[in-house]
Length: 125
Length: 478
Image (tube, rainbow over all chains, first blue to last red; front, side):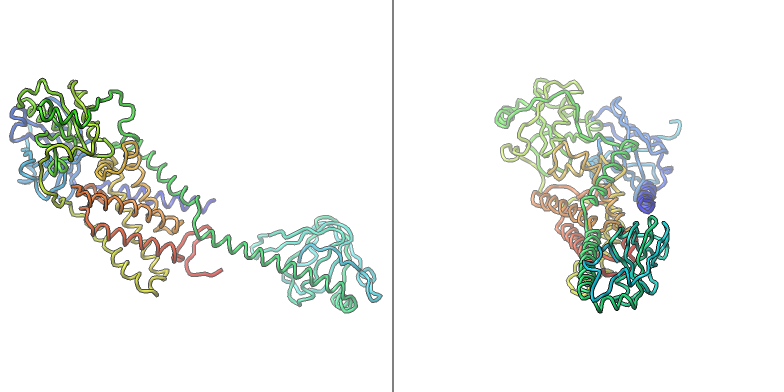
């Protein structure tokens, strides 16, 4: 019984260590902040993006706010929506500009036909 | 040494047991003979009760039998000349006849009937011992194989951990997608929808992912992926506003997935936005055969670099080649390599999916083989099953059952891959990482290699196994 318990404890321990390690991503601090789309969406509304350092974020468009989680992986920003969709942002100009791939798929760069570009909003601006 | 009744005749050739032996009385708890000692006497019990047992060096006692009046013991060691095979202790005050070796030999010389009886008893004991040994061997072999409990343990543990983790996971998902949704969406048949399409009386909306829409959609349909609804809806509204006569036209939503996740889901979302005239195309698979279509030729889907797991996945193909060499094929050391490799691969696969089950659920939907009811549960449980089974393989626990589970998962996945390849589905496999690898025949080959590895483990794994009997470091034969 004691031996079985030790085996089970070993399995659970390894799982927890694995989970803890898998949750670690690259530092978010470089990209945390507020962004606004360069062009209006649907010719009238600008889209606002707020990336908080704790990994939470909001995307506001036409008065509607969508919450998401975000991580930095492989020099790209991965945004996870509640629906399971992933939107991948490619940072440029040292993180001042973000290009959002609105296909919801991974591409080496941002496809021009489905790309929304955001610029960092200066603090206090 | 075993319970035996007194010989049929105690008298032969003028010799009687009672005349030969010395009567003696032993109090309860007296050890009369001890395992391993040199034999000197044969005993017949006149009254009382005695226990026969074996005892290990660390005093683990295995009771063999109890003897009562009329039974005898101690004859085997005298006949074979070997040390005592077991110990005998009185359970209560007992009266015995103690016969010396010389007297016992004389008794046998003059009493063939008694000698035959003792030989029969010894033979019967040997046969019984053989049967018990066989049972033990069968038991051990079965223990080294697999049982339903192994599967229950692994799958039960996986499901339990998946459900508990889902409760505390910020990214948790409902167990059944759409369960309890009350606002039913009206459906429209293909013929009626086609008629409305031809008369330009409806707006067709494609609810699938963008990659599916780009590859093929109903000519003139609008793209509104259900999974990006919140972000795309303002643009959709704008596009609708630009459409002539849109105010009077109903929306006909279509998808293409067996799970009906996207089309029905999108229709519900549109209705929640206050759009009353929304219908779902009833026959979700037949629209490409009836409606005019537009789209691009199928292209290879882009995929993110996988890093270490991506390289590790090629090793099964190498091991597949090694397995073709007979002496290596049977090596238990190859089994260890296979276990470690599969364990690491499956744990890496699992850890890349566990934290965000909603992402993996969409990958499951992409394959178009799972009904809506099962998608979320599958997406929750499968990564945990991969993790637990991978862990069991590495730690050497229930390795044969773990190997069969990995084989089953791989076979299901191979069927999904082949299905996706034949249908030219613009998807990534979703097997490792959140984006996954392209669905290609190479991927099928890699997974076939893994199946071959599981067979090797099942047949030849026997080292470094933490089995029911303890840790098996090296080869041992029963």
